[in-house]
Image (tube, rainbow, N blue to C red):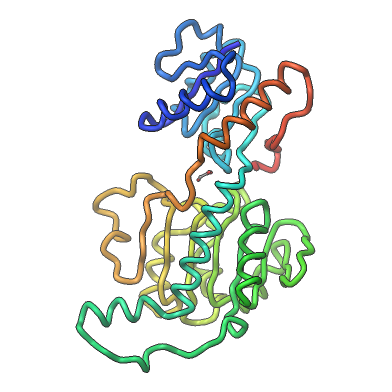
Length: 310
Ligand code: GLV
């Protein structure tokens, strides 16, 4: 019974070490050293090259190395086997830290002070004095990640709303759902956080029309997928003042090409898709458990609904 890891090279040794510790009986190989493809029963993958998984004739499941599985579904040859994703305390905590850091940064008007510092300007009037309960934060996506983020934003005292595909009921959070409630959700959201899964319904969801539904001078934090945002529409919204600033962890093309206009944009903060990183120390346990379940014919943890796309 062999697991194949198909993922960026730099963390392969770490994964190997953790599997040796957590599942010593499991044989683990790292792509491209596949050996006999017929040996491979399970694949743990992050952005695998298209066509590689289809070369494994005895594959029984694909385990996404991340919270999202969209990186697997872009491959039209993805074998018709169960797909799981990661749901992990550390992964969720990382995203929530990122969201809190940038919401607080916007709430406290930090981009203005950063610009003042560059100009050696001391002007404390620039900070608009608002209490957290007067700041309306909205989170798109109320799954594992979104629910943790809204709970902690609410605990900090923010006026928090959430928007999701299907109706949710979260204490202390104004919940909106479905296409009809997107406009009222956006209209009340001064700091917008995107934590949506990437699906056919959510692709390009932050575009000229939807960004225009936010209050003027709103902020955007995208820690979901680059494909949620229409790049040119974001730049247009920043230029017109419709948006004051954006923080982006994810991009349509990654690494972000060196000549992309986001890099030097004074109203954009960029991080290299590391808002949260899958931690092998905790995630090997759920991978090993899912392998045990596959072998025992039991229902898998964190199974992805192919129809829904997440
Ligand atoms: C990262 O983007 C993930 O899906 O975990």
